[in-house]
Image (cartoon, rainbow, N blue to C red):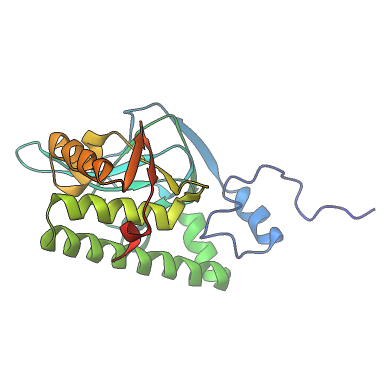
Length: 229
């Protein structure tokens, strides 16, 4: 009878994109370094200006990344879900974080301490390559968001955001593509740079046109044209 390579059945990041390409032996080795932490909705994981402890991986729940302006206004940068990572600036540059991270719902985080993760990058080429790809995608996504906000009105911002969710985590059904909004409309409005009232009006417009069917935080996309750039 074959002996399993790894005795751990519940590796927290097994299907996360950053680690999915690693061998089971490498995953098992990394899992032994992980510290798991749980957070309540609204609980701050990291504050802007702090130095992170290592690489943070979302295992369960949703994390909001945001900046706070001098006048106290909150600008949402991104919502992170299963397999997404954050805390990279402190890892690579030894600099304070430029954003705060907060749990949107009950959330579990896997933390790999900084010293351990930097050592892994030096000894695990596959992980180093995938980590570089994660950083490149993060930069590309940030540039895309900035460009989209600058060029489009509220309707197009919302349409583009729904399309990005559909392409990333959408589930095809007999009626269309079902997506789940990662946070409340107020929070998503902060990400898109529009008020909750404007977001709701634009969502109603899309619904009246037969393009979407909102169901609370779930939205059914009924038309393929929504996915067009």
